[in-house]
Length: 126
Image (cartoon, rainbow, N blue to C red; front, side, top):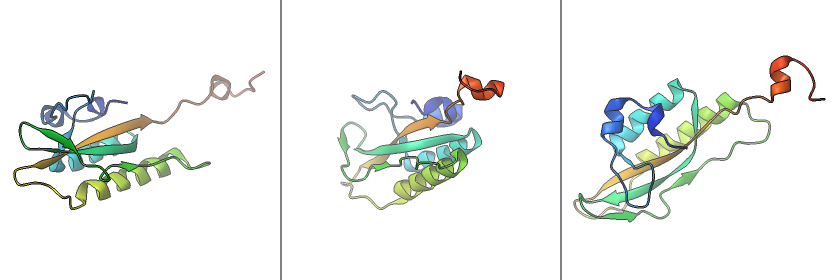
């Protein structure tokens, strides 16, 4: 899920389009700030990828990405908080960059699933 609807217009303007990536990436400080917006909007993160960018060329930083699965029976807020914490750690990690490169972070968002309709009505599914 695209992360841009869940962050401020200011952060969206800092997004750098990455060829072959539909959502684009954020520089480090903007990526950390985006985490605050995700928490405020109750958005979890399934993970993210990291790219190096020197202003004209991109290269993936293999091994710098991260992934978070929701545990069985884990309540949404626990998953959300754990996934955001994992993102903050990943974004804060030291990376092996070439001179003139900066990291760009691409998030994969998820939102809390809606309960089945029968639970909204208070009845059973049959």
